[in-house]
Image 1 (cartoon, helix red, strand yellow):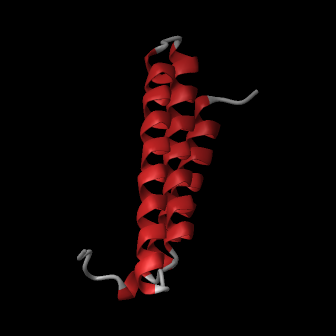
Image 2 (cartoon, rainbow, N blue to C red):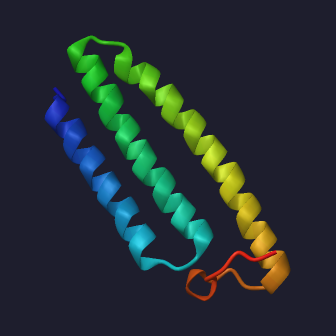
Length: 100
């Protein structure tokens, strides 16, 4: 039988993998995938605790987080495309200003 501890450990591992991805990789698309992995790890923890506490608050909060994640991806990908069109390079270390 799986307990809330198992879900919490899995959530922590997924969050750590996402955080390492964001810190190590320099490609913005890979960084977005790391951020999404961290958000989904938090969602897993919310759903697990919501289920074990028999409270719907965590599951409602997951919908809010998913909405914010979708908006983040849309805006982030638009920025990446705009930067790529302007500079032909999307390396995060070389992008220091966002001038028009």
